[in-house]
Amino acid sequence: MAPPTTTTDQQTNRAHKATKSGRGSREKKKLLQSKKSNTLTARHNPRAFSVANIVRTQRTIQRNLDRAQKKEYAPLSDRRASRAEEGPPPLVAVVGPPGVGKSTLIRSLVKFYTNCNLSETTGPITV
Image (cartoon, rainbow, N blue to C red; front, side, top):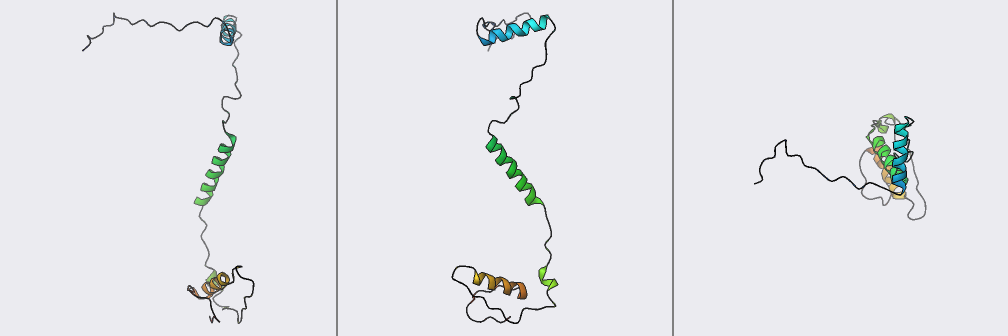
């Protein structure tokens, strides 16, 4: 175990090597001269607070806006209550080529007017 240090024992560190040439030296000399002559002006670095990757920043901003919009809550009105007195149409014919959503349309119409899900959409359907 090392002996405890007292206040009289001061550690002396070696100073950094002074810059004698190059850009750093010139800047330091200018700074010292301006300090001596009291002409030191505040320097402004326009790139100090800029964004490194603008695409990533735009993506992050858009994601945060989308998440904030998701949190907004608008209660859905019950569409069935407004059409309860009307009832379903007397006859609906759905015709079209394969893969355009005929069965999906029929299922959604049945669910809209009866509030129950339809498992098969083959043959005539009576509501």
